[in-house]
Length: 445
Image 1 (cartoon, rainbow, N blue to C red):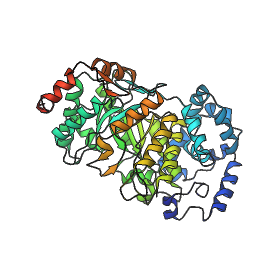
Image 2: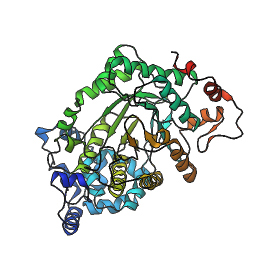
Image 3: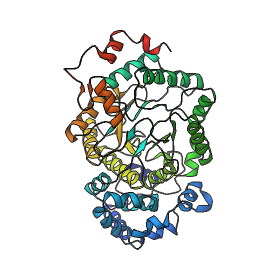
Image 4: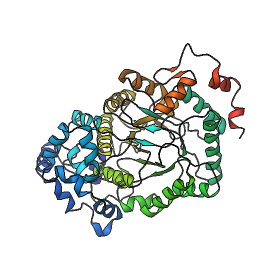
């Protein structure tokens, strides 16, 4: 599996990458001839040692797997390229992450795009995400000191440009309970005051969010970073039981109106290696195993923060592009509402042109949501992502719309989800008045 992976710096760092292009092609050829069912009898990480392996193996749906049970990995690729959306949806519970990772290793970029574009995954909370013809945006109004005025300014900026239907989601600068509660209340005040059909989230550690729920804070979604091995998850301070406890607590809040998808997970190739918890398995396969964890908890959102960990794991724009398309394909094939934070760190061999190319490819591939960051430059996390205007670009050129409930709200507000604030809108309008009056009214609560 590792030798068959397209070249990436993380596998080389781990000492498991192919030593040459010839070795890589030989490994891909051998992998293509491997029976798909082999992954059900030989675990890459032993069943007895890893709760993620046990989760994946014990939850396998053999009836859903039946249509492809006799195929090799290469035959599975051919089957996927001809499968209908309905067939792909029915197959998802029968595919385990290692199967998805294996077939992705022998696929071209156009294969990854073509199959993912036919995978239909719908989730919901206060609106409906993933419907055909839609593309949603997480409005990410981070601030280096969690200053409410700074967060509110970014919220207004993003809302006026049609972002925010995936979630209004802040990465907190501190993981303290009081600071998290303050941000939760700010987000909920904005959402409630303007009757926005979306959901909010402060991306604190799951244990912090549980304490916020106990304190009566307005928690819509529970966030957590997850990985593909028990040991890597332990390095994050979590296990499967804790995630189940958090999901139960969020469901008990009953703050949803459309569907009870209350979890938000983030992942990234290289997280297990950085925790020395990779068991000699390549980073892309472990990323797919993280999706095996995610789908058990019926999340609203899952996104691969593809270039965030740095060039030690994905060296340049070419590796980031390949990884982003692999992650999206594997997640969608496994039945997840996948987004990608199309991003890079400032010391990677990548630039915004690389991100434009990946954004366009993922848009064609039917990505559920992307990030909306002011100016594409996250001033708190210090990395480069996609902006509100990038979201307008991809919606416009591909004819995509926001989630239907959010699109209706934008229309009421005089905002076009594909073009931003309309030139003919009746200003000042609700958001225009709020902006003109300053931020005091928004942060007073």
